[in-house]
Length: 372
Image 1 (spheres, rainbow, N blue to C red):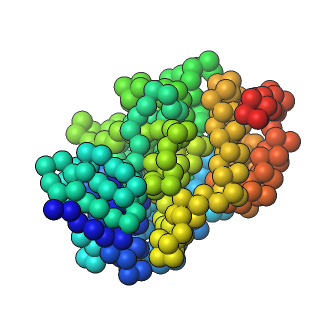
Image 2: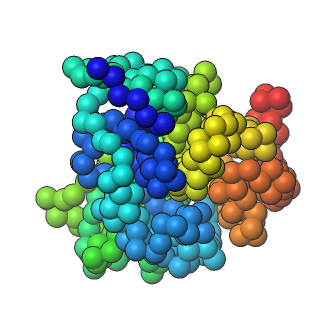
């Protein structure tokens, strides 16, 4: 026996659940499959608040920082609110009561059929794979190790800021020749803070035990003594999709919606979901709706940026981010969030090139030449 529907979604992380929810709300018959469809999401998801679509509403935000901080070789204050999402509230907002939810594992996925392990196949006019990406040695990745502390206990590490988007200071027990990592420190609400030592990008990323050692060293130098039993967070995921990924049948990070320079994908997926749903409703290609020419051009520019980050001399990393976060907010926003803003992305990269120190310029230029 097979089940036929308009859309079948594989994977119910935030991207897949958003797609199933919005498609069902648009009147499509939807089947969604996941091994654990009701399991809470454990990762910390965050976004610039101006990235999130209005239909979500403000109640899905767990904590908001109005002016997050960055430290390269000097401090920067960003005039752009940044928020941690409330996973439980987001899960409820993406209600699937109008969809058919199947608890199971997809054995094989094709454009119009899912073979389910130990169950009936699912047939659909369109199958979209939203299962995310697994670590792959061929892909650049982000890694991080974090702990959750009460705000009062974390205060000495915060240096007067309520949020550190990036803190590249070398008080984590490393030298200028060591691969760099930064402190990501964000309020989680309920009087708690996530302190996370992060390797922004590497091939491979720094090991989690090394990041834990660096976080311990950083906190010790800042006068923070974490208790023995702590909530911890482990992070490891690719920041790029495989080049041969079939984007016409994928969504979310699996479709390349992950930003190669930040590792963020949830906000981009939530913002792009209605374009895909509109294509499904009208019977046009959702892959084309997701990746029009301008969006493909922006992705190429950002991949040049990823190449530059991977090639950047470790001692130049802080100076690179000093140059980037000195850019006007509109330029920062274009590069970090403007998925189809070719002009803004190119202008941000050109302005950064002009503002960066000469050694960083050489790396940026080399990355661009190698890409083209």
